[in-house]
Amino acid sequence: MKEIHDFTVLERHRLGESYFSLVLGHGAEMQSVAPGQFVEVMVEGEPKVMLRRPISVHDVNSERGTLTLLVQIVGNGTRRLSQLVEGDRLNIVYPLGHGFTTDLPTGSRAVLVGGGAGTAPLFHLGKVLCSKGVDCTVILGGRTESLIPVSDAFAAFGRLCIATDDGSRGHHGLVTQHPAFAEAYDMVYTCGPTPMMKAVARSAAERGIRCEVSLENMMACGVGACLCCVTDTDQGHRCVCKDGPVFDISTMKKWYQC
Ligand SMILES: Cc1cc2nc3c(=O)[nH]c(=O)nc-3n(C[C@H](O)[C@H](O)[C@H](O)COP(=O)(O)OP(=O)(O)OC[C@H]3O[C@@H](n4cnc5c(N)ncnc54)[C@H](O)[C@@H]3O)c2cc1C
Ligand code: FES
Image 1 (cartoon, helix red, strand yellow):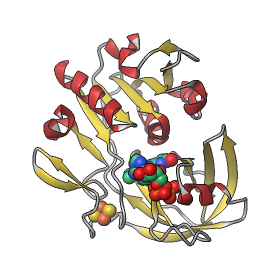
Image 2: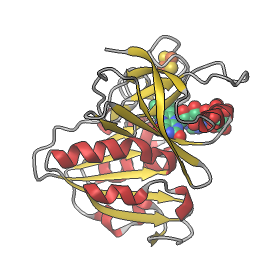
Image 3: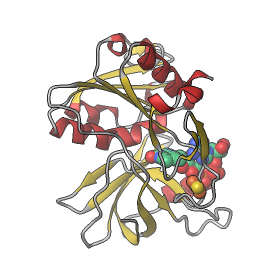
Image 4: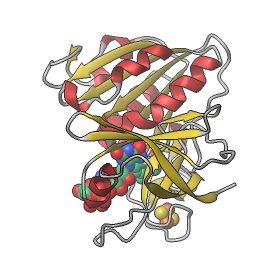
């Protein structure tokens, strides 16, 4: 059930030059949020930003009743959000979209491949998979080490591998060139820049491994009303906000082959 709530900023952390995280609570029981689902955030105090901004749920703490967002500053909306301080209010619609599949058998092997801000939803995913006894490998990539946020926290969920374009940390090269990526898995999950996700999807398809991608198309309403986020799938046009953002690549050949 979608809800609109005024959340309170309980914690704010700056993570390097371009990222920050917000821990939010609204003082009442929270809706359950599946990994891969997102929220639409109202940006107040910035006259140039009219529409809500879609942000993935990075972490959920059900005991504390909080959710965490991990955000990269790329424009007016995210810059304004980065200026929030503890005690500020943030109006949020949640939970939105269709998340990742997490009902894998205990002992199955999954690889989570993230790039840049696409790392955000993979944290909640890794936590849930780990609690279900799934053997997780996390491969995170970026142009340089400082552009891979919160990487070390992922080590709690399994093996952590890093790939950087400039070799500043981990494997020198792309995530798909990391030796761990070539291993056998039962499931591949990916979120990040579109070229990276397409390369991951193509490789998974060639190897016959099930794979889910989380698309980050531009959005407005976030609930399937305005059609601005439509993507072309093998089953026709689909709204990324309502039918996704997570899609199984078995329906996305058109998308990853081009
Ligand atoms: C389902 C979903 C989940 C997302 N989750 C996260 C997240 O967890 N953390 C995070 O940092 N970002 C996330 N994003 C991207 C985030 O929504 C945009 O970065 C944000 O809306 C930009 O707002 P702005 O006002 O700061 O920038 P704008 O001024 O709107 O745009 C600044 C620049 O960013 C580009 N941009 C805007 N939106 C997107 C987008 N969706 N994808 C790629 N480029 C974009 C614009 O083309 C422009 O070049 C998500 C997007 C979607 C659709
Ligand atoms: S954002 Fe409006 S239909 Fe998806």
